[in-house]
Image (tube, rainbow, N blue to C red; front, side, top):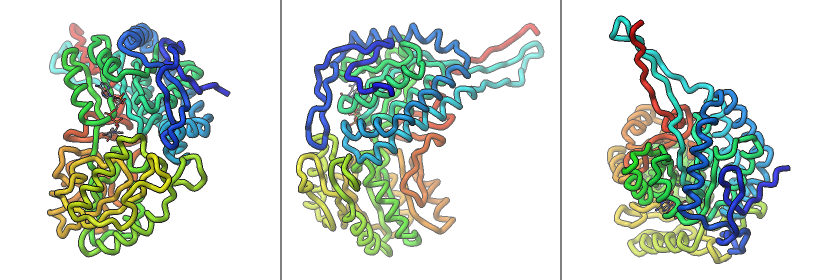
Length: 476
Ligand code: NAP
């Protein structure tokens, strides 16, 4: 079996750097690894390695790149249990969710192994009698990827798998809380036969690494998943070298339950959409709008379901919610709940730190939430379900769209006319109807407004890693 528990960075096929920064288990603060703290110099080295690897890698046949990606996919799947356990240890999410994330991460590698062979160009009827117009798509070059801690595996493969399929090479900076999963994925890629320099993973000082990536004219695309605030910094930093930008940023998802909804299904949908990963996903329901006719029923039923949740260490049997990632996350949730309660919200369950202490927060339902409360405009990023009451379709569409974000949205309704009207009126990159979960490798994931630029997954996810070249063949 592959030894993929690495505590070093991966540059040009070599494991480098000595342990300086402790990585801890968020459930109990116990140190689980010491990883290097790299900066601008190592980043430049990694970019140079990726640049050198680009020529040979991009010249391989698509079928050859595809075979290596396929092998990587198979190794990830074969090691899913161990990878899941590692992910739980450094990130905290329950084991079942962690394994689910590993399989989700693998699905991007599988999908883009197939897609590598389908990077089609086009021919265009020519306006010139002696000319022919051909359009081809070529890999953009070296790409830089910066990823967050909430999906330590999937956010990496969702970016690098399409890049590799297109023929690009990559320098990746994982989140500082969760580099071990990233190193493990790199070890498996190496075993799959990915040539040296195609994938480089460096952990350390975000500003130094990010700065070197943004400044380098050799990096042709920046793909980032994280907060809108950092996304804006990266846009500014990449302006001087005019890079292609792929940005998956913050969200403020509305979850709407209309009077004609199947309320039980809506409760189940809210459970997954809100409480997966302890509420720490960019597509988590952040504002739950319930029409007045079903408000009482929905809040009672949701409270009953939430009370069934089991909080604890992610690797314990039956646990459905782990800890929050760090102390700042706990403080933010406490502040937002305190603000809401202070302004008149009622707690039907939860509402405080869990008895386990540390970073464990009770799964919470709040009723009588109103738009003047801070959680209306902030990503809660915690296990708190705020219920707002509304009366009409027009009112709720306006409320749902009253945010600078536009990533995921959800609604439950059965009237077909309403389903179309609302789906078209929601100003979001993704609309999930009568379900609480929508992420899949085959569909384009991404947001509008300040939630980002570009799409990941599906055939669209490869586009930002290719350039379109127009060739006029004349003199025929
Ligand atoms: P974050 O604070 O923006 O950090 C994301 C990554 O950016 C980390 O690796 C971070 O490293 C790095 N970073 C921070 N400042 C940087 C700089 N100046 N230059 C270069 N890199 C820098 O976000 P987070 O708290 O980890 O993740 C949560 C956010 O991600 C939420 O807003 C969530 O909605 C969003 N998200 C979006 C999606 C999506 O697909 N749209 C998916 C998941 C998460 P350091 O921690 O070392 O600073």
